[in-house]
Image (cartoon, rainbow, N blue to C red; front, top):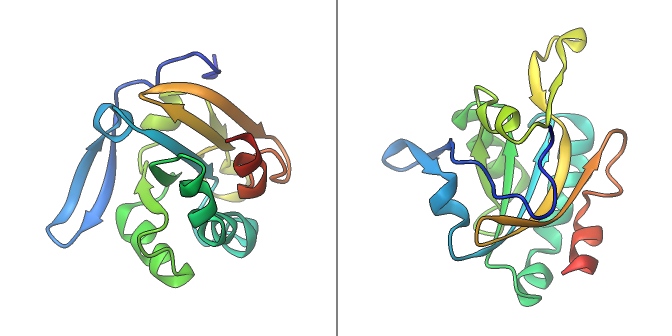
Length: 159
């Protein structure tokens, strides 16, 4: 069953490439004591994700943070090297933290995995955006097509 408003985010590890190498990022620490805007994309460097979804959150980061979010996080079922390269390519800087769910453990834990094998993508995460308050989901929008529910402007309006 998919995660919904009122649910606690499950405890899993995501990955991040840092100057010290690949590091675990525990969801308990990531979300604990913070208001987080998190969004997931089916894949780094994919057309909609690269041209509109991630750039929207980068462009609106200051406004999102000004409305009370402590951080903005993007997750994809890609390895940490790809996520780091994508963030550099798109100019994410310190506005959006890009985390890897390389084995789709987070996607499965929240019940939002999808089968992208028809396009050679394997298991991926559905496109979504959520607001998480101290580990508890207060809003989640899952997009089956497009990204109207999960785009930065929609989340900004909900904060």
